[in-house]
Image 1 (tube, rainbow, N blue to C red):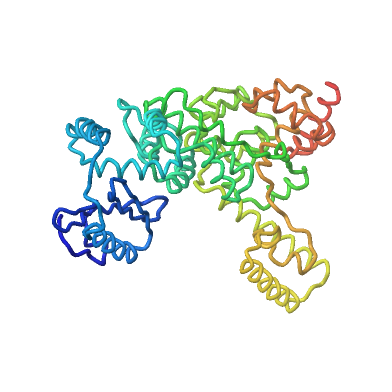
Image 2: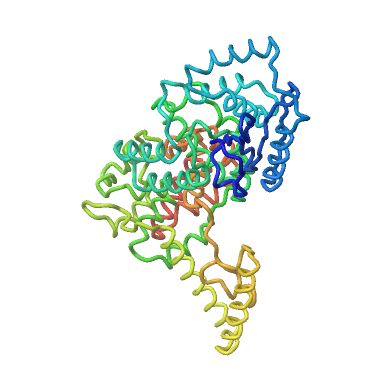
Length: 478
C-alpha cells in the first residue's frame, strides 16, 4: 500500500503498513507482546537502519510524517548500500523467496519473537514446542480428552457414582484449563489447586482425577510416555486423616431414628465395613445367610477385586426382617440427603427431650429459633462456615445449650474396622474383610478402641440372650 497520507486509526491499516512518497518509503509494524500493542517504525537514513518502537498510535502517525518529511528533504542522504549490505540482501532474498515472505515481514516477526522470548534462543523455543507438539501426535484439548475418558470408563462398565465423581472433578479442571492438554504444566495445576481453598482430602481427590486423565492421554498417545507434569503437583498433607467413629450408644440412637429402608445401608456399613458406594451396588443375592457370608464381586468393589465378608450375628439379626429375595439392598440414590434427614431427625428428638427435661416453654423455643436464624443469616453473609451453623436440626443448639448430633465422616466403615481389629486382634484378617491394606489398618486403627468397647459394638441389634452368648464366646476365646 503506497500512499502519502497516514490513517489516524490503526484499525484502518493492514500491517506491515508502507508509508511512501515517491521513491521514499518505509514500514510501520504492529506487534502484540504480553497483551500490549507496540508499533515499530523501520527506515534507513544516511546508510544506517533505524528502528523506533512506540506504544501510542497518535505518536506513531505524527512521528511517521516527520520521518517522511526528513527523508524527502535535501538534507537526507541518498540511500546507499554497502557491498556487505548488498550481499546480505541477496542472501536474505534467496532464503525468503521460496517461503514468499518479504524481508521486512521476516525482520518484524523476528523482532517480535526476540522481544517476547527475552533474549532466549528462538531455536530453543522451537525445540520446546516440538517436545510438546510432535508432528505425528494428535492435538487434543483438555475437554476433548475428558469426554473420551468418560466415554471409555462408561463403556468399561464402571459405576454411575464413580463416573459422576470423575466428571465433577474433571469439569472443574477443564473449565480452568481451556487449552491443549500438552500445554498444561504441573506448576499451573499445583497453583490452581492451592487457590481453590478446598480441604486437603478434596484437593488430593482432584489431583487423583487429573492423574487419571493424564494416564488416559498417554495411553491414547496425546501425551508422551515420559510426561510427568503430575509429579510437580504436591499432595496436600491430610493430617493422616483423623479417624472418627461412633460409640455403641451413638449408633443405637442412629438406628432408633432411622427410616426402615435405611437400616440395611447403616448396618452393612457399621458391621461389615462396606463402603457407601459398594453398598449401593450390592444386591440381596450377594448376601448368603446359609453360609453367613457377603460376597462383594469385583465389579462392585472399589478395588476391582472380589472379597468375602463374614455375616456377623448382629448384622444377620438386623438384616433378617429387611432381606428381600432379589434387588438392590440400598434403594436410595442420594445417600447424602438421606443421612442429612436422619441427622435432622436425631437432633429434633434431642431438642425435644432437652426441652421436656428442662421444662422449656414453647415461647422460649420460638425465641431461640428466631435468634438462631439471625445468627446463621449473619454468618452466611460474612462467608463463615463454622460448625453449628448448618448441622441439620441443630440450628438452635448454640443458643439453648444442648448437645447436637453430627454425622462423622466415613464413620460407619471406620467404626467397623476399629472395633473389628479390637475384637479379632488380627489386622491381616480385617484387611481382607475391609478390602484395605494391612499397613493402613495397622497405622490408623490398631489402638483406637479397647476390646470391651468392641463387645458392646457387635452386640448392637442382638437380643439379651444372644448378647449373653456372644459375650460368653468372646470371654472363652480370650
